[in-house]
Image (cartoon, rainbow, N blue to C red; front, side, top):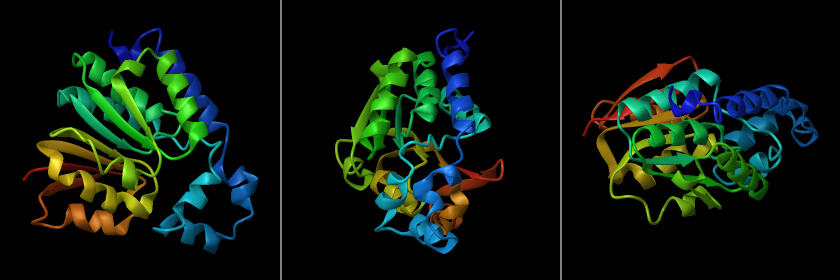
Length: 221
């Protein structure tokens, strides 16, 4: 048995995934009111992303079950001790990463979320999962919260917030990424500048797509 499949965490994760599957972002009135063009513009905007994701404050927007397992495996297999996450939401991915830290013997996970109601829900889920002691949730815009007081060496970075900011967040964390650190970007197809950066020869990464909507990269320089 490991923490991910423990009687305390496994039922919680299953319930959270089921609840997330029951709510489609398109069914939220504040999102449904947007035209497809406006929705696309907001998703790719570096200035209006708070408006778009604020409309989704009641939606979990989680990683898939497969990506959650991938996160656990990468963190566990890489013996990660320090992890940074962009986009906490309800804490589903956070729980997977914190479970790996627990099974690695401990560590620190710094995660950032700008929506206060999601911060509250994530904290409750982490308490319920018995993993709150491993996680620091920073409330606010990640462009600010992930610009200060980061560990000297980071073993894993998860990008799962506003897609337009993936490259900007990477820039704030990049100098602290350990050699061999993994970077997992969910829905990376919505961030072409990020994909171009991690896939370009000479930028210090090896990078491959996973499952059609995730990019897995490793820092090699």
